Image (cartoon, rainbow, N blue to C red; front, side, top):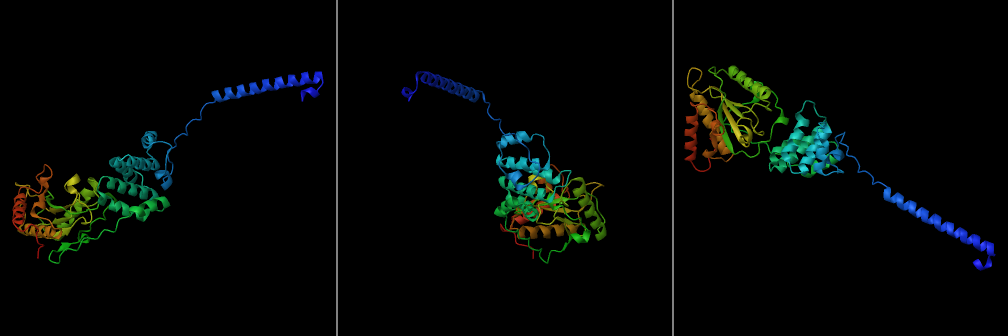
Length: 353
């Protein structure tokens, strides 16, 4: 092309080409400098959940569970505590998850229905991780009844247990005065665990002097015990499943569907609690158990062992589990004799006729 241009034109054309090359080199240099000095974008900042929903509690995070727990720090809002419980479950820390969920359920502020459903689900999952799914059965039932969030409902339906069968009624030969007879307060079922498999029966005494065997006096005594257990000790109900007064009347305490609160901690698991009303200690502040009271205790024990397929070795005094004189030196020998009698029978104790 250049040979068609006049001499001046060719010179001008070469000059322009030179400037174009120079400008191109400068542009590349500027681009290279800009790329070299450009800073990387900062990582997306973590924001704790502000509402409790299936997505915010169970959804993915920009952080690892460990990092997110650290980022949550001292945040004690309900969404943060529920998220904390979920993260602890991912790290296989079920007790920490239970603690976080309990703070939502039983803290100073009453949770909303939706928040309670998530907390109950998390408790059930934590018990399952501990190898005790039956302890979370009530939490699952409550979560199913309360949940409305679609993601929470789907999770619950995937693990929903079959309904627990109610225990069979007592035999007609064992007369039990129902809770209505002593005007029992309604239990706080959210503060109780399902009984699960029954493995033992334990005898207690109330440690309160009671020589008045009138039904009204005994009924009042049960109300005193329940107020103490629920008010002062924070139990979900009266701690014993059955109570026997000085005249031999057997009263219904806590429903057998629920684990008792009478032997402390893990000793309550699968343990039916029977309390004899009275203080069976030697001396002026104590009293001897009545014959009718001891006979009623033996009938009830034999019936319960037979009903649940237990043996004489499954009968205990409270003192077997902790350093206490309960059920009192005047009752312990009676329980020991009953235990020996039952041990001499066949391996399986027949139910009382």
